[in-house]
Image 1: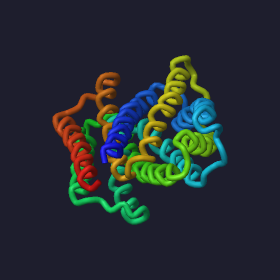
Image 2 (image 1 turned 60 degrees about the vertical axis):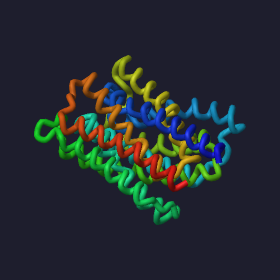
Image 3 (image 1 turned 180 degrees about the horizontal axis):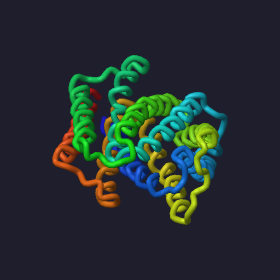
Image 4 (image 1 turned 120 degrees about the horizontal axis):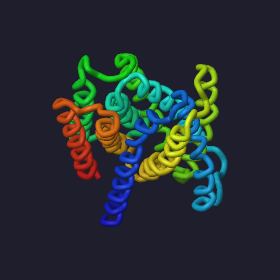
Length: 291
């Protein structure tokens, strides 16, 4: 019993680290001076060679494409396109928090399709985490920064559905394929879709400045480290549990938005962040009791 417990603890630690790293993403998206979908393309395109080398080292190569990994790539392309546009229209905190309302979708879908029935305490933890996330988004009121906050918030909410599908597809792929291979094929599927979207929307494809290139390179490295850690942990934790833990991501993003872009957190937003984190901790207590 001790060995599985240590394994779950290690997976949880890696998952928290990956979520914290992904919290850097909206900051880098803001700093990258290219179109929103184009930035998503560069993120996965730059990550591909790194993932290929890692797969060669750990799995002997990328292997054949896995259908669930390809499905994850389709969902991730939609996720990035919608999310990057939401970051353009609303605040970093709102775009990231509303996107991470994913646990509602993931918990329900995992229950129905993967037979991962949540405990009552876990459902209560999800409710707390989502309530905290909602408080962070609602706390800005009419003073929300951004070119079009209502549109940005709507795009972020839509992103939550794509992110949930991505989580479930990655979780399914990890049942038979290593994390690096899954990340390679999901990224390979995402890249052309994002490039086509950027071209169709008439976006600027190439970053215009050195700082913009540095930002997209940083996004590629962050994709390998952050999403790779999450994919690895999803092979060892239930999808519903993992989706709640990554609510740490919007807290990190909100703090960085405050420090770098002066998007100050109000009292309601600060309280919401604390409640969301408490929901994360409670979800782990519920998961351990269930095991």
